[in-house]
Image 1 (cartoon, one colour):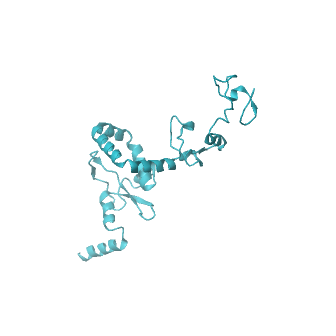
Image 2 (tube, rainbow, N blue to C red):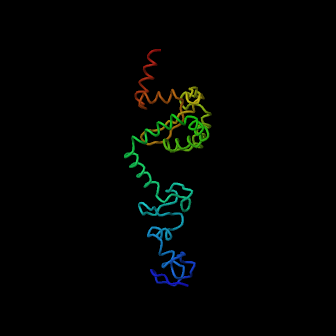
Image 3 (spheres, rainbow, N blue to C red):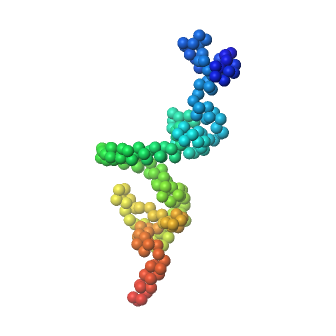
Amino acid sequence: MKTCSKCKIEKPSSEFHKASNAKDGLYYCCKFCSKSPSAKRQLLVKDGFKLCTKCDEEKPLSDFHNHDEGKLGLRSNCKECEAKWAKRYYKKHQKKIRKLAKTYTKTHKKERKDYREKNKKKNKDRELQLKYKITLKEYQLLSKNQKNRCSICGNKETAIEPRTNKIRGLAVDHNHETGKVRGLLCGKCNRGIGFFQENINFLQKTIDYLKNDR
């Protein structure tokens, strides 16, 4: 047993770190007292939460990026704090980062192509969630319900994607004010309503115009 010089509580020897230069071979204070203030607070955080070492706030585990070497398999800073840091870093080193990215693009064409091919579904899912707040599974269900045909003209997509030399998937059409997904369209119909600014009056005048020509 040993008394901690900080908390003044007598504790078992196992509660102290080893110290070769100490007379009793143990650190002067217990393991808990030797921790940093944030580390102490982390021990008191409720299950399912983690303390961000940057903003010092308790946040759900989902608010932290994965990190193999971190405690709980997560990074010490929350996603919001890391995003702010990344933004400041990019602003400060913008020219250097762009130059490195341009060089990497030129010298790693095969690796980039292999990565895209290997992570095609993962990248598509991330893109859909960022742009339209839907998952790849939800997109596939929409396409299935539409029988892989455009919601307006009823035709299948025929346009070729130059990068892959394959037929493109149907485009996601959404309300630009509310963000709500309306359906999937072929490239022509999607561009068409875009050219008409999604304005019902313009579209009706176009219909009337075409009818008068008959």
